[in-house]
Image 1 (tube, one colour):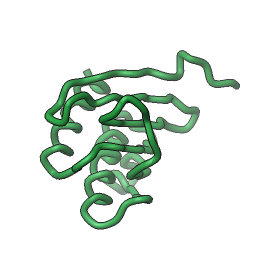
Image 2 (cartoon, helix red, strand yellow):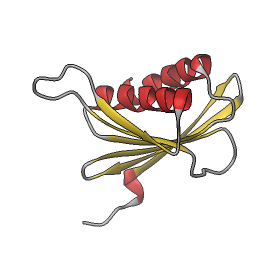
Image 3 (cartoon, one colour):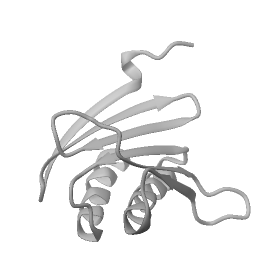
Length: 116
């Protein structure tokens, strides 16, 4: 089975830092979500989250290329996406100055795009 362009969706949304660009790649076993505040996507803060399963009410995640508060913020976003979509989510987010407020703003944008 080959990946097609139908497996790739893109979106843009205005947010407090300017413009948030997103690319969602639907994979056989989950989704790859790229987010950027610039014109190009780049390797940056990352996390992988799996959705809740038998005996677990919350998603489980791990971060990489991130530490401390950055890891927590990126893992939180990935966990929300995994819970909403009920799929494993790999998130790569390149947004300058990521903090709790920006995280909440990004979560709202993603919920609007992915859930509605």
